[in-house]
Length: 148
Image (tube, rainbow, N blue to C red):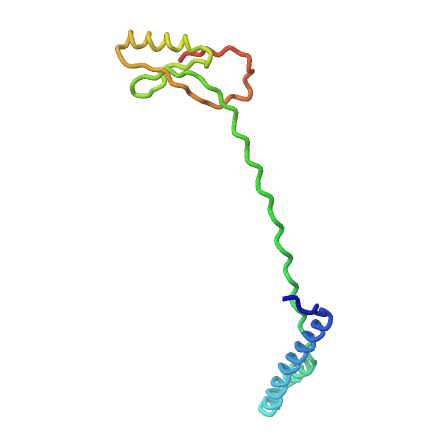
């Protein structure tokens, strides 16, 4: 499909000539209408003369529309890093309500709490691993055996 290379300047010149021919054809029918209309509107006044003078000037050829620049490719957003999570032991009752929570390294204390609640309240209590986001402000080395 390799054809001969097109000369852009010649193509542009041909395009301009075609537009000039079209603009000349557009102005010729308007001139004929003016001649017919001039006979009917002869005595209307100076306003018609001003309009006729404006119409006699040849219209300039229209400039070709500029090609739109291609849209810039947008960079995809950087995905947000998932927050750091920490694992803790939760003591839950039979209705899945969290009764107490312990740090991951305190599994023995969580087991004792579940056994104590089961003996005291005559119900079912169990441990389950709970993952929650780490607070960014809290120091990492602080002991956290918090019981609710």
